[in-house]
Image (cartoon, rainbow, N blue to C red; front, side, top):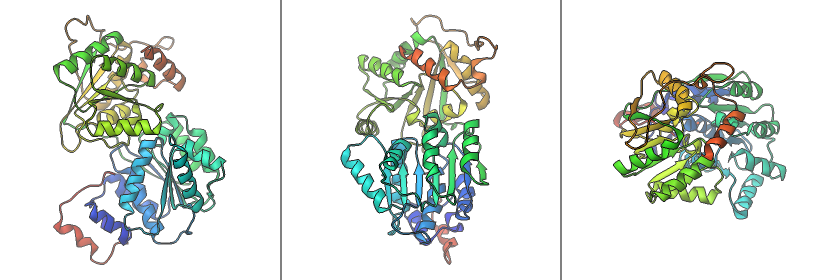
Length: 436
């Protein structure tokens, strides 16, 4: 379906024309009409399917039509991370290029007092769209800087990530300030029980849109090394010796281990940097800039980089730890082989993670190549699921609780109106999708 077949207003369509966005992704085609019609929406779709445009385009179109109070906060968009908040804000600037009467403010932590004062001024003056991380918005609410009495749209982007990061209470507190007539839109890559419960709490008779998690792109070469934990660094050293690292992301599940890996790679004279939530905003901005511009070759990161962040031309993704579910695996390796390029994804699987990796293979409906360990590293563990003590279940059969997850990490760390004639606009132009 083409965007000009939807009931988006002229200014939005003009911006989409300029950006050469013509055809909708499935999540956009199904969500935009429902949001325009005023329904609460629960969208389940993975990163890269165009969720940001699925809610921004209809909301901006409605705001621009002028049916909402001026100089008031009309829309609140929640993001789990500063990076995603910045990305949503950039998309807002593009889609809202011709919307002279629609204002926005981005609110996220890790900045100095000057930034906080700018946020406060934008909130108190009444920005149409607030894009915020939970903690920072709670701070402004506590200080009395924001009035939510006229908010008409409440959006939770990457809701599962927000809950994973412990923002459940913050989300519920923010929601308690919203008027009962507020239209709520929630997007999540996965649908665990806690997301179902949050949806029941916040959404009113929602339209549920599910887009199946797609398999990784065919142009990603996937492989794995089965190895003991103390052999992983040797595998990395061998990989970077055989192929000089360039545009590589190494993912780990713990901040502590990210620091350890970075330190070890630096000792190996690998040009690398670390990315995790303990860095302040200036540090995170700097490391992302240096990586995107090629000043560093290897980015060692937690899953903060796995979802919702656009980084192009990544040649290789290395999973230093096996992700705890198949969706996380797909999100991680989806950082490579973008824009029809080829890419490589290597996973280091220690003995206790074999069950998890088998579940990923089951989801992918394929067996991932197991590479032999480099010479001199010793004997690898057997590729066989290790039963859990007590209940006899393989660890990969269920996702561990947050408490268990953290303790394992600590152990490893020591390791959004068609116009007349508009439907003919696309006939003489090449098609292009919007995946914002």
